[in-house]
Image (tube, rainbow, N blue to C red; front, side, top):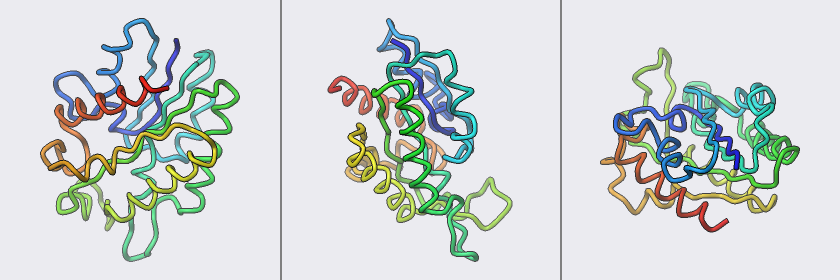
Length: 196
């Protein structure tokens, strides 16, 4: 089976010094499958829509997994706006589903992670006044979940699961999972994929 996984730096595998990210950890379990990691640091749903068709070309996926949206939710308090406006974000998610159905009905969205706000509000590696805020992340995460329900697409809820953990222990820099966090994500995702 060909599996295409799209996302941002968390999907790319940042800060998993043991295995290179949750996608690589899935590869260890799905040894008889071709898994393509299309995670790119900093990507939003706008970026992903721009590259989706070229990335997926000739891959013939039977399963497409998305883990995208946390960068869309970045908040700019002075302008009182998100990086990708909320309604546009919802339309982008719907468009990703529509484009994916040209290839397969096997579509999965992985929900967004919670963040340690004191480390990423404001974001230390940025040059402006931009923030990751859990209330904004949850708003965008809920939108993905609701769209998946309407579209009959599998949604793997990461945010709710993280709330019952001491999740700061599995984050490296306030947003990116460390090796323990990537292991935890891989286990949660694998558990849900086995139910499909």
